[in-house]
Image 1 (cartoon, rainbow, N blue to C red):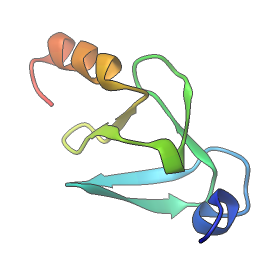
Image 2 (tube, rainbow, N blue to C red):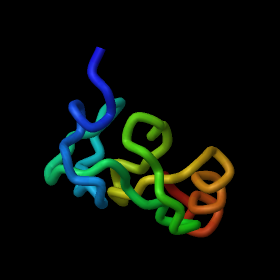
Image 3 (cartoon, one colour):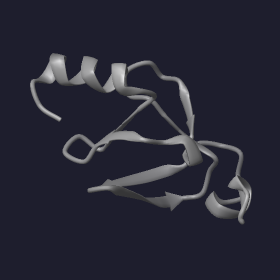
Image 4 (cartoon, one colour):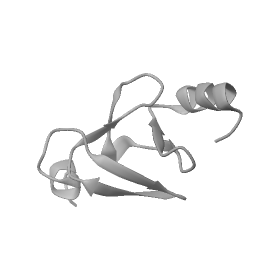
Length: 74
């Protein structure tokens, strides 16, 4: 099994991520992305919530719901 560093790149910084339906693609190596609502760091191996339409990541379901309520769409 790969560890997080092997899987997502050696950089401990922020990754550039492309969000797809049911998956995501790491465009630039890093170990985390940021929540668009809270600004919290989300380790890539824990990333579960994002919007394909807005290309944003969310730390948890509550953050995703908050953004949906603000914009009216996922």
